[in-house]
Amino acid sequence: MANPTVMVRKATKQAVNRRKGAHLSTLRVAAYARVSTDSAEQLESYQSQVRYYEELINSNPEWQYAGVYADEAITGTQTAKRDDFNRMINDCVNGEIDLIIVKSISRFARNTVDTLTYVRSLKEKGVAVMFEEENINTLTMDGELLLTILSSVAQQEVQNISEHVKLGLAIKMQRGEMVGFNGCLGYDYHKEDKSITINEKEAEAVRYIFNRYVEGAGGKIIARELKNLGYKTKRGDSNFSEHGVIGIIKNEKYKGDLLMGKTFTTDPITKRRLDNMGEADQYYTENHHEAIISRELWDRANEILNKRKGSHSRSNGKRDKYSRQFSFSCMLKCGFCGGNLTRRTWNSRADYKKVIWQCVKSTKHGKKECPYCKGVPEALIEEAFVRAYNVLCTYDGDFIDGFIEHVRAGLQG
Image (cartoon, rainbow, N blue to C red; front, side, top):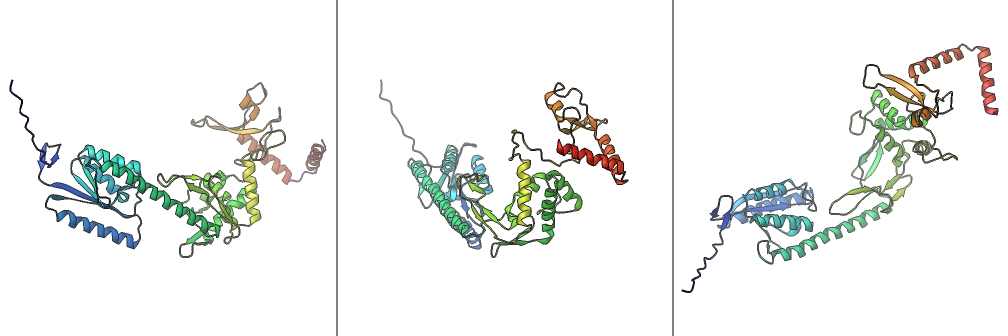
């Protein structure tokens, strides 16, 4: 048997369009550029990068210009918000690009996981990524090893920068300087000196909120009243909410103080922010700026707020009832068992809608706790209240004397 002859067909090194099964005479090359901030200096750098890559690609006869993809003023730690980057990846997947040129790994991504994920997915499509500064081509054997090491260094650089920024902000907050301002009804922020001053038109709404809350109105009622009275939110609309009203009452800025460090960033990669519940330092400055309401009014409103949240309890362990959502809230007692009456709506989605007040013991624990209680129509209670009020207004001496004796007997008992 004759010895077999093996013929080696040398690789052409030509790029191949696998979708069409054809060899490409030139590589379709695109570049990716990114600047991190929107400052004039950085935007000029962005324009320079675009011009540089256009000239570089067009000057190489083996390359075919496939465009420059660029994101302005976008962070490199996450790719979700980088529109041009994602468009470039889609074009690679669709077989329109063979090579991507990037200045450095940190320009491509500062997240090791993202870097490796995208490089590997592009490699499967036969698309190479060339990092100029590090001199890495991801299609070579040692490219991924170097990429893993250097992308980890880039990610560590982000973390180091984040720590330095946190330290600088902490020093500013220790000096009582305001760091960041998200907008606050009643105050205007001045970027030039990072100060806040009272906006008198908006401050009227703030004072109304605190005064009504101390008078006994709840957050939902106040929100409705603000809308009916024509007050505007910081956004310029009338969409006040119960949550927004409570947030204003809790905000220490309205008494002239400033608490910084209410939230913190968990890590510089995900940029996830959480409410600070003791995980990071906070900085409290008294008399930082001009107050809209008095310190006494703020303290009183927050005392009521804490009571309504149930932070104070009676000696028997039951939660204090402290709500004024409706006209008769916490004012009606069951005549059979002495329990509180609660407001309920029957047939709320039907034409036979009816608002009644019913014993809490009966509704929560069943008829066995209060077998004789029935729902009392709210209209009937309102009518009885008006009749009683009219009697008082007529100053019937016998009625008033009897009423006072009844009160005295109750106090003495």
